[in-house]
Length: 114
Image (cartoon, rainbow, N blue to C red):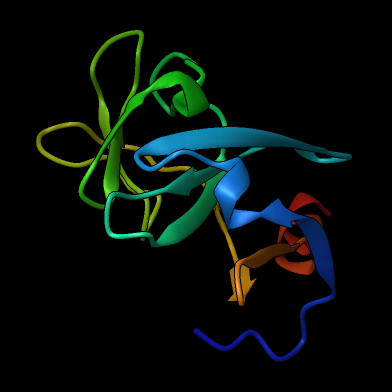
């Protein structure tokens, strides 16, 4: 996905995140969870479940989704929306992967916070 107006902030290497795992990045707007799927795709979303604020970065990654460790809500890593019968969403953050070097675009997060 191309995000032409983003200012990219380096966050590390893809190898820093285990397959089907996550790492957190602290920003002035809150914690961002950066996920790596079994297919080696990388996604970033806010690190709190829309249900009760559970830490999504500690959830189980399956396909392009994560299951919240508190109450088993399933959140799409692609859209940030709760799946199934649950309703709610978290913001997605653009991620760029250039030869394994990861960067996130915080401009969209900062604009949403204003």
